[in-house]
Length: 469
Image 1 (cartoon, helix red, strand yellow):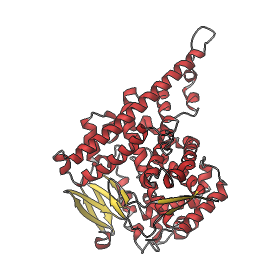
Image 2 (spheres, rainbow, N blue to C red):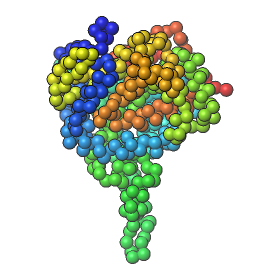
Image 3 (tube, rainbow, N blue to C red):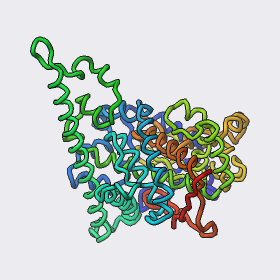
Image 4 (tube, helix red, strand yellow):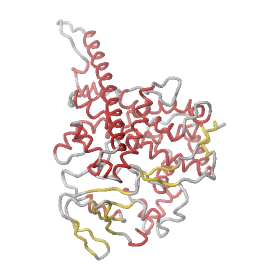
């Protein structure tokens, strides 16, 4: 469409009209008009929305809503998930180390877990560590529970089935077997999330009660450390859910309601992105070796646990950035506005009515040889600091626009877990590439990107992990 119609075109998918913008600078004018209460792209995922309504999931509905209701949902969660993400790095790194210790054995030897499934389990292990302070180690078949593994499977299937139902709405209209299966998988995932959170909250409450009882003040009262000073109490390192319990701004019922959607989003979105990164690195062994050399030089075998370490790994950042350019997990980024807007491209102005979907094409400029040399090749060096600096003032600098930087959106509705997901991706890639040479078992076997809810390589190639010496 971009090649045929240029940087701005309209299209209709299943009768839903949208305007597709290819220039991110033009898309910036859309972002600036979002207003106080922006409309999130999740509102277009009707399968999830309908499921929230059918199951009366209040927090799920708040998360996709607009206006003050959305702000009420986001505000209590933002500080501990979006803003202070770096405090979770040591725990994420510990989990990544556990994952790496069994990766070669689980993926390539007796257990023979497909690598793409191993990555989904890895995402679950890391995000669960953030949520509850402990990894379920689903990547280790010797200790993993059936219940935890079933959650990962149900979540992955629910996401894939969502894509199938969205592209064929009649599945829902006729309540087909496919749609029934989607609901079953969602039920399984949400029930798991509620049970896990409920069990953890009970543990936290018990721990707090025991701690309070142990502190007897001279006057006969009981003093809880958290009652002394909320700010001081929150400085201690706690899992995400425990921090919410201590803040007391989210009710128990709300905690249970949002745990299912949050766990699902924290697992599958991250794994989609990581599956592409590892596929690109396995397909380009010279680039993987260069990354391994940087990691060895900077980390010297250690885990990636600090922001300072991240800042000293430019090639790692470049590999992740280049993977997103070449193989984005979704080909568009979408917005809707509550008011009409004039979009100007060149000397032409186009009136976009309120409520119409406006999408940024993530495959247009980033794959155009006018802006990108050898666009079909995986070349992380194009995003190294010196390369970025050399593009300034040229037409090619457009590929460095922040709208092309990662798959988690921009603006006020940027994904709540965006910073956490990026951290988990960097930490696990750093750990596995330090420990293993990851290669395709059959590099002649072809795959194609397939649209589910997001883009996946189909069939995903089998991988071989060989310990580095």
